[in-house]
Image (cartoon, rainbow, N blue to C red; front, side, top):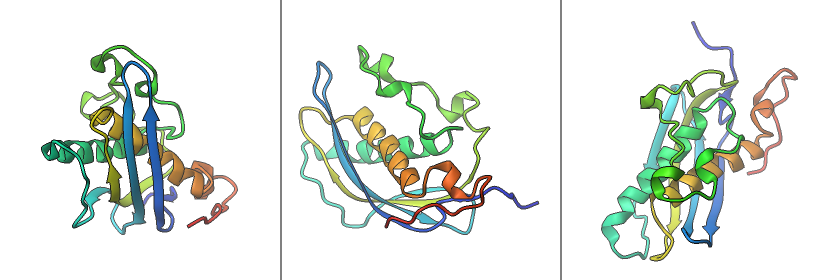
Length: 172
């Protein structure tokens, strides 16, 4: 049986730019640009654009940062309300306290209640990191923010063809 729910994204959403920067006792810095592309099959695919170059030392941290972007995007897409504020964005103490803990593998129930079907391929096109404030959490939050911006471009979950059946506004 095919789902009657609308699909996200309904059309390509390119150039979603996020600059996540916090300057406090635990600074954050992550800058990304991603494209959301619709796919035929349901699900989530995350890719890093071939040839993506980021000036950052130690360079061996970059794959973890990129994976954190994908994890943040996937986590928020799988949440029932993708534009609700996530706990991990609070100003908290140590890194273990900042992790919101809403991981699918923990069975938190975040997988239910969504008003749309995820059918997307997300491509990380650009990234920038800073030696002082860049870490996995900063890139994960940037991933959350990218989903929010993409949802805004289609008019939020309601813009995906909710009760009114409207497509939402196209800002590409």
